Image 1: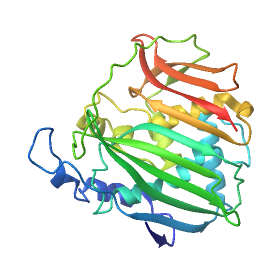
Image 2: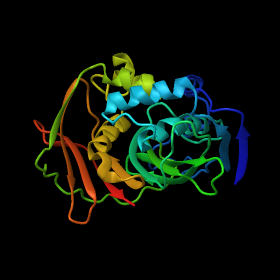
Image 3: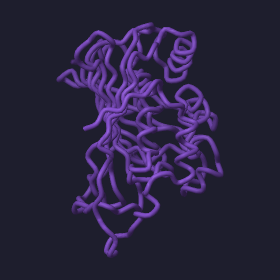
Length: 302
């Protein structure tokens, strides 16, 4: 795989503009199951890398404080895994809007996130950030891909953070789909909290994360993709659940989340964040009135 060095983390705004304009070859490869169009393609054989990203500036400290307040993290000089995702997300997005990337950015749905935090990353440390794409594969509703982001503290030999974000491009069938399996019925656990999310949550998280995807910040944009109103960022709900685990997760942990149905704003989410007998914390969020699952996952101290 080729490593391409960039001088700085690309701004998310420019990437979303390119994504909205249809950058990439995905538009030409939007094919339906059973068509005669090619059903396989390849991902860019490139890792984007930005060396020595400073986290010592006032802007990063301010964003971290705003992020902590928004998701309920305790004020700290240590960056939680959710904030490290925010730090690396623009680089992964820059890869997804390249001409050689085979899937369209807009309308792509974040379906899973798997994070390993190997050591704490302190505010003020310089880090190297990399992003690459892996695992192009079919899905009954389209095509999935993994965007892998590593954050390494300068001077260390191995990453402090590795995040694997799985995205689904609905309606884009360019890889064979596996057979559909029956999903078990969702049985809500006893709640430990209830979140009342107002209509401004999408814009608030977009401000601290830079993720201004129209489905989160514009009612018209959300409707264009089939939602009745704006929806909450999946990583916002996941980060709130992680924050509720609190110090029990330790300085190093694995954080896994699967996203089911999105949270339409404004909305009410019942939440269960509970420790198991094996020390693994389970996290679940759902719509109690409709008994619909929003997210589930786990936090495992290392």
